[in-house]
Image (spheres, helix red, strand yellow):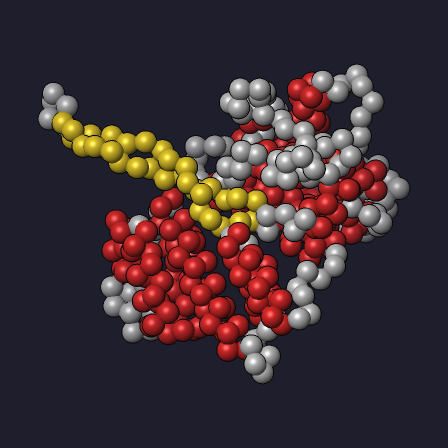
Length: 388
């Protein structure tokens, strides 16, 4: 029999450190650690142990205190914690539309004035907080969150974590894969908690992100080999360095929030204007918004042909960029998630445009990342008539 929301649930944190300890940085890649931990957190909350709520609470409270100190607002009157991006809850200032009004980076541009990865002992934002956000996004009831009071507190905290993540990735804009995953999962957690809490309106910064159609730049990390040399004992060493580069893909935060919390339809009713918007969004890297605009014109009797051609171009460009991201950063060994996604992209291209579209993407891919070209050849082997 379910426990009524009015009955307080004890703080079930006894086994949490041991649970988190089984999913530590260095044991495997982020994307391999998060799913099994998420599953364990979901199982716990279904039996009345809201461990995901505890993870979010402990991490967000420590992060908020550190942010409060960094901004010098601990003893001053301030806006709600989830409006941290700016005093009035806006994403950006009027003076500089590309930067948040309150930047959390240090005066020397060397990063945050505190270490968010060691805020709470044993809690890592890209592993444990991401898994907790995913678990909260599939809450089945208020009971699974520990009752209405805990649910309200969790919602306040995930709003803050989302605001913080947007802030740190708006400037200098070096959003990497784990940052992207965390933001997407926090949006899902906010949406589910907001729904269960019967809250009327999301925070001001959410509406601001929707109105501005906010999109974040996505960076990739690639190991660049610079030289090969032999040591005195004859051992050959690869010398290189890590390099960040703009993938030209964008995370359409405004679109994701609009899907969850509503907002005006940004696709113009005029077909010609919709096509123009699609081209504009594609140039900015927002392929999700670009495709939505272009697909609205596909059935138009006069402009439908242009829309189909543009859609093929969008799909090809997005596929090329995603393939570069995957093959530059991840293992493409048999059975790996990266290899599976490369195969999926090849199949999607074949279904849309056959060998001609696959070849066009392969040619463009080769012109941008020739050393990775042979790997792509082999992975696509067997898709349609493709032979690696």
